[in-house]
Image (cartoon, rainbow, N blue to C red; front, side):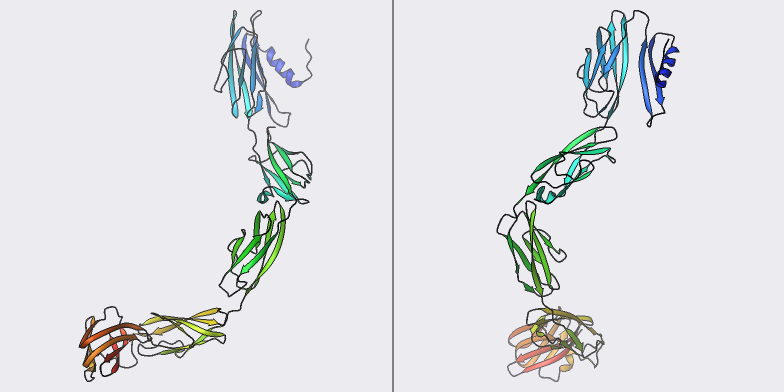
Length: 463
């Protein structure tokens, strides 16, 4: 008579009663009453009376990665093993293996005088989690100043960790959880052990070191006062060991760390630098003064209207604080204290005149003035050959200007209507001179001819 207290075992036994022959059988039962589905596999042999039976004992049929599995066979005289996984031997009553993650089968065949018997063993290897411990004190080489704290966080490739345990618990706010806070009095090496849903685990370590020495340093600015658009060098000079410097606000700085930083604020700004040594920090502030730039505007006699090629536009720079100006014309740059220039471009279109006004502090302001020039003339342009009645004459022949005079020519200079000299040529004992003008654009020019007798200025139109 048989008595069963477990319904699963009872069902397996009922299956066993249905077997009426010798051989190897596997009975599979699925347990639906448990939270997770569990398959129970029973390998059994039904043998005739007096026949030897092969038995295999497995150290772990479900294990974590990097676990050594030991399989031991008994019941027969000799044994041979085979599998896709690596075994330490293929013969003998015991083998060792360390399979990779996955489900694997190992076949063992036993032999004795009564014959052979074979069993297939299934092993499931589950993955281990990974862990990397991050510290909020990483920038200070894992140091915290005495009395301060560091947050330690266990980072794993497993999306959901079953649990994380920390040891020792000394100076921790808790000994479990993904993140803990340590406030140690001395250096402590912590170990975090993480477990995944398979019950597999891995451990990692992280030190929290304690600093007790504060840094000392000085700060300077060169120069301490700048104009808008300029920059100053901010320097932190240590007088004791300083492991790092951090500057703020970083918006107008060339960087946020280091002992030398360039600052370029547009308004007066106070900068804070923090010096750190073994987690202990000291901060100080330096102010960089930014001067107010001059106010520069301008007026045009043309009122911005388009002028003709033979007209002028008087541009006046208006700046109460300025002591000098830089006028950047289309073909030259003029440095002067004069705030007014008479402009007569010889190029049609938009001519850009750039004016920079400079005050007594060397601060500056700039404006761009556009002089629009029409390709037509207010009067009737005259050609070179119309000067025949003058003692000095000039004739354009293609890309050459021919200048003649009743006396010896000493020098010929050509100017555009901005007053810029575009050509100058010395002449030796000639009353007729040919000058190449292929590099001059179409427009009105002034030709200054010096002879032994006089100087003659001619306003000419070249096409």
